[in-house]
Length: 101
Image (tube, rainbow, N blue to C red; front, side, top):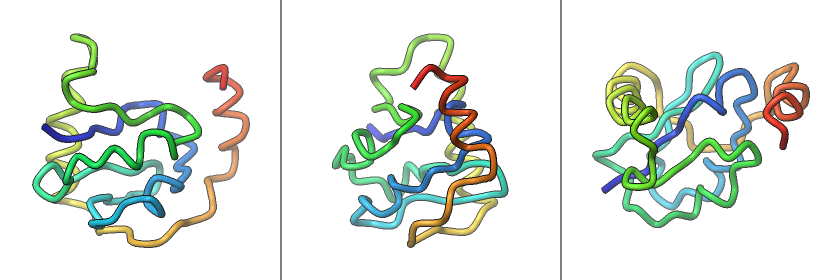
């Protein structure tokens, strides 16, 4: 099993999850982060670190969220590894409020 970043990350890109990860399994692009399933050790440290509740264990994903497993795996091959925390994107707080968090 692995952990998966879902759509809640898009537009905010809080990287508290990255700072909690012991194995550098996160990859980043201009709008969000992804988890590389080949590197993730399933420690779950990232789940409570995410302020927008975007990270789930693969087996906890709803049926309509299963596509995120493939998206994370593919994106991890395209985007660079992120090892340190970045500032959230402009508008991240508004996105978080929009999500009701």
